Length: 208
Image (cartoon, rainbow, N blue to C red):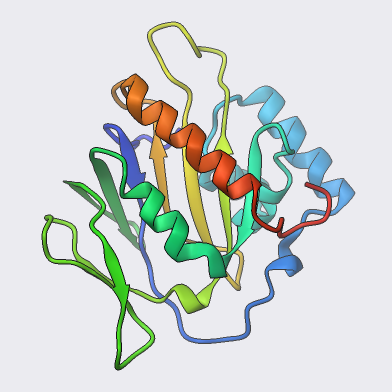
């Protein structure tokens, strides 16, 4: 787990320029699946950004290699429905990363609406977190449940929802558990509902 892991949930944000979305370019090859599975056998519960850095693979490729028991994917076009599901969580620690700099904001995930004059998705100004996203640039969305060796010992292994761009990098992700305080049962149940929602969507990679 990243050392700046969330208190409950984590969201990382960045923006990109409009380019064609080709999510399936980052589906793991059989050899990459073996690499990722070997990494997780030695590092249970590690977050995808950590695995991607260690293995020198695009993060979306790492997520695609986790296997159906630990991950599910959906096209970026399902963003609005999935964002609404994140909004049912009581609070998140929103993690904004720009290069080596990290900012954390404790806030609920506000409702959002598409702009009538641009391609932005505008988050309402009712919580500390506010801003403007470009979901038309999101190539894929992965929900991950990373069971670690300490699960059940006063610690909850990380769960997360990650949004990837057409370069295989995470645009933002929301996580609960891991090195942060243990989420309550209600939010864990809501994450399970979110995982079911993503599993019901069209998988990005055929192997899932």
